[in-house]
Image 1: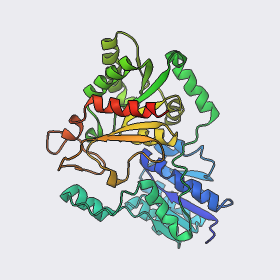
Image 2: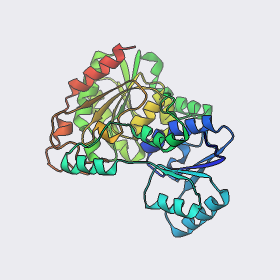
Image 3: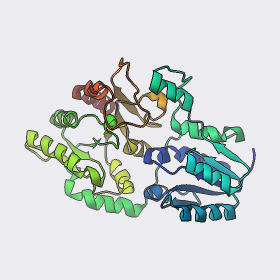
Image 4: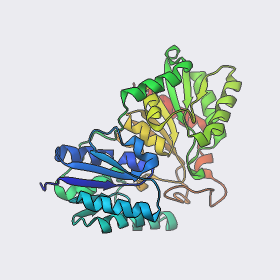
Length: 349
């Protein structure tokens, strides 16, 4: 097996992609215990990587301005990496590769041609449904490194667990037999199961279980999540649902996920965060499909999707609106289907 002393992993964004790189980080550290292993990422995602004990350092890209890129170029040259793993493969990561003067570079194979024909023509040339996590591992296959089967991981420091516990203390989670996490948001519209379906699901679930429902989302999604909580609680006449949107950092969200028996979620970065904490997951998929590589990885899960639609997938990352204007991929999924999948996972305990 070839030996490396300085390794740089490049993946600027987004949350899910970065978490999906965690098996690669772990496997590299196991293979090269004394190597310097650094990760280059956008600043907004750096906190999710900083507690990772397998990394030597996290290099942050704060802006895309030329001055910072020049500084980054000088830093990478000075580090003299003997291996760069480019998991992003875009214009900026190519710049990093070009000016680092690193001789040995491996680039993720995105299956871009197969993806184009599947999304644009609905011709499926995929030979498998390999997860993005495994595509990242392909970059080191030639060095004799293989998947260890341990799944995704995100490390949560004790102080973060303590701060998260303080935030959710008012929810009195100890009074409930089950805790359900719910992620009703996503960056792109076509990845969101309709808000009214989450309301309907929340009502049905809370009636069937003596459970607390926790909603997760960003600061931009406070109102969206708050409306769901308000509508469910108004129907039930009790505070069964609590919105934590905007109240938690990403690592605090991971800590609170640890309290959840199951997480019901859209196809979003928080879904991968829940998978990294080994939560049971019910994922609702609309405009995207398994072949694109983003199904829940390394944890017990059920994906609920509308089969038989000739227009799926219409995108590989999500769109602002349904191109056909009917949005059947999401509107065709009933609350009862998601409830049944949730009960199946809970029944497997």
